[in-house]
Length: 187
Ligand SMILES: [Zn+2]
Image 1 (spheres, protein in one colour):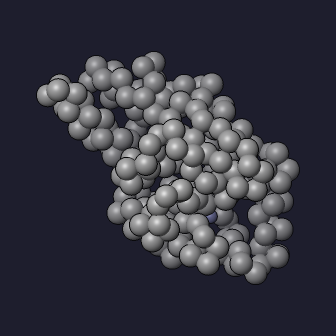
Image 2: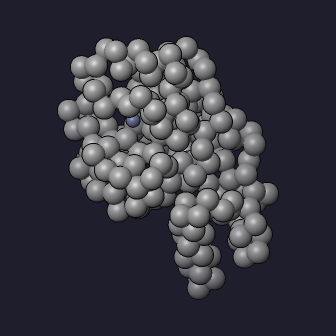
């Protein structure tokens, strides 16, 4: 029991360190002898597509899981995908853990990667998406717009701010929180 707790605390420190410094999890994990497993599950609210993938395991980054997440988080409007920022994946799993949401619970995905064409179209349309920036972190694979089933949007927002790990945008009227791994800022 004691050991498990130590491993758990170590894992949290490890993840916090990974997000803060961008250092990969693999080296630190091997040094500690711990095998933290990290996974993310989503439901795309536009297409109802669901995906659940382990992106980090006993042997480090899981390339198949990362590929599944890159595909699931693609620009659903034109099926273009990118290599999503691994720090963002770690950040999202930390956020979910902090809220006490189970790893297999599907996070509602409003927006992940946005191709330049989609970003430009959303900007032009304006309206509810006036928050669409010219150089969006979504275009860099460093942002998601999400909500979590069973978690109040205000709680999700506060938890995202508490991580101090990147940008956090609050869109209560649209029903989502934007989180990215750009510099720490809030709007
Ligand atoms: Zn966003």
